[in-house]
Length: 466
Image (cartoon, rainbow, N blue to C red; front, top):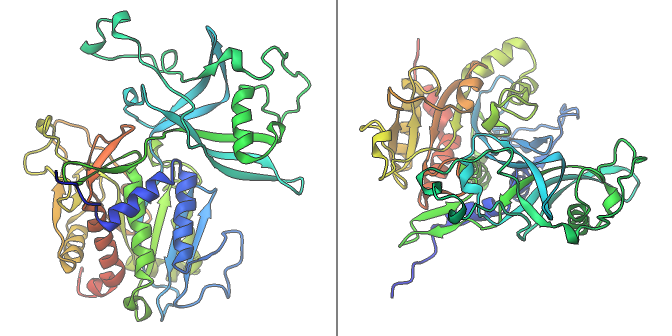
């Protein structure tokens, strides 16, 4: 019997990244660790950067623990240099615990949840779910600290109704997201202090009456704090089944959150690898930058989303005067990277016949005449030349005329005035709790980003546009 070998190294690193990052908070932390290992220095938006930034330097910053910028300055850097930016997002459709989550029904402890983004919600039924996120706790000095939490065992489940009780379920599974989509967490007989009346004297910052005491007990044990030292949280549900290689020859990855941690991982991996290469020590031209945004799945309108001040603020701090900032914008180029739709063998009619990307088929350039994607012929040409330098392949995607086109961070970031192109990798089951990509594709994307960081500024000199 043939035993499949382990997959490509880049895909193995992707799997580790995703498994460590059930929420945007964790993805930012995982990315930060990787960058620091590569020699990046953390800076803060609240600090004065004068005298801090140096030619040849490597820096990163985070905002609200849920968005990240990292950038490198060339050896002869001066204000007015362009930025070569890879922009992605790190949020995914999921379920989030409500501020008041305590529910008890027919002897079951249930947890109230809210849907986030446009998930394929039926895929969340009958999965082993747990909790991860950010919790505000009392620290040792009597102050307050947000701590990340990831509980590695199943805690919750949303059971389907037996077919014996709904004979039509196989004809079309429909459910009410408010009344029939509430996870079960335990039995009421196991609730701690279940007979204790609500504490009406609790302070405004107390959440003890908002959630099951058994839930708070699990959180407090995981964080090594007392339940009353938990003051607030943002908890996401996630599937405890890890990402893994799959397929007869390990040619696939089955995983949660490929949209869009696949692109985010590749951006981090590429810039971390680039600064360790000989090319970095002699690099001239643009500032290389990656931007990992939050809240793309709900429109990017937040302090940590793509429509925030994150990239404009960086541009103007690197080039403080209006004239020099304008020069920087004119010299800049942004690659917006989000996953795309691979051709589905059972639903091939959903693709325009000449625009049907395949997994493991290389990077996909996304185009839309109505500017749902920001690509144009110049941007597409640049991407093709950069891919060509690494011996890679290019695929094209346009949506059918009789279907609506999705979008991503590219069009909104292009409003800054930076030349922008939208690209991605083809995946299946987008927005499901379990998605699928090709195991060779992470390296394809890393190769493109590396080529971008190494060679865009030089290529741009050869591109004459009147």
